[in-house]
Length: 239
Length: 239
Image 1 (cartoon, rainbow over the protein chains, first blue to last red):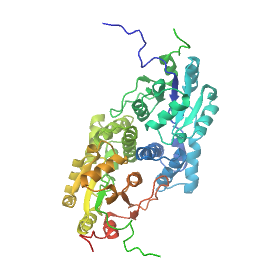
Image 2 (cartoon, one colour):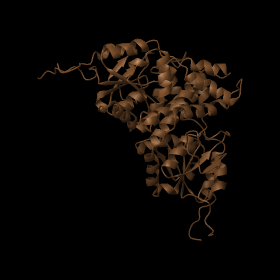
Image 3 (cartoon, rainbow over the protein chains, first blue to last red):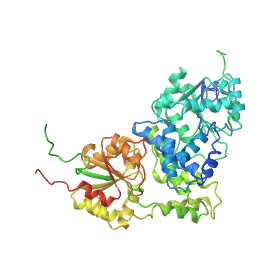
Image 4 (cartoon, rainbow over the protein chains, first blue to last red):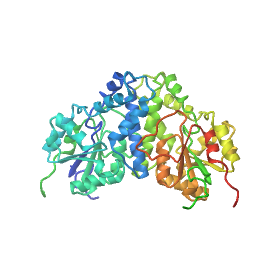
């Protein structure tokens, strides 16, 4: 019987940590109030976000792509058309979309980013949304300096979880996909990244269960702050 | 100037009409009551269906697949876990899923199928769900005899709107994709079918708007019954 002196693959530090943005870094809870302020049910926020991803993923599966902001506004327009709103449809769509770009990060995000950076890890974002929304979000939180790159699938030509989106991130980082660890709250992102050859971490802030139809993450943490501790430091050279 | 004696491509009769099943043939409105009967909001029905498609399309974009019934139950389990239900989670999931397989067709469906069959068109179904659910639905409505085949993406290995799903239908029908017309209420299905080379018809029963991020259908009708009139009859031989 031989012994393995290497650390377990799942918890050794990757070259680059690739953070999802929407809901992984941003707290989307305030969006529900935006719907309520229009006179619609706050429950529509979850329906809207699921339908936006549904349409973006449909395009990805069929070989197309569209900007997140366009899909977001179009889905809202359909969803809100049947509601008894306190204002016109254009204004209502703007009210929700402007709420989306004004979200704040989850409370654990600043410490989490600092811990990852302190461990010597390269940290980037990869969003199905625009890079500018990610930049504004992280700048407002005062942590943009910990990010080496803020990437958007708009430059990849296809949304996550299609493999081309993750391969684009690897190219931009100048490493192999196997040197990336995708970090997300969404099981579909974890599954897609793993199929594309990345290592994966699932951030499960709410004690949720992981759906059986998606491949499991290499690492599960309850917060971004916990992730730094799990991954440890990146060695700067040979031991 | 030459004149074209053929009918316009968009409205000439295709060799085979390929009908989507969930929501295109089945009326999903009663599902909202199933959620209400559990003590949950009826609005969760729309969130659930959008999230099921989101997850199935994510798998399609990433190169995987899972049975509709499994994804449906798993998404329900996550969605209902936070609700204050009148019964246990397993029973609650069963209550919604059994409602799903007991849906009825929309009122315009029987006449629509009869009109298509009377026009000499071959008619098949292609569902992201199982073939048995489609068979039960159409048998209950007394119109199963008008369908030549009831196809499921479970045998294609990938969900619509990935091209492989439509190509599978063409193979099973023994025709080229260009000889198929996909008929659906869902713009994502219309868009995916068009990208795969099929002709398309959008059934818009609710006077909804078509989202700008998806390619437009060749034909738009307000009901399945209207479609037969738009397509006309299939010539049986050379004129």
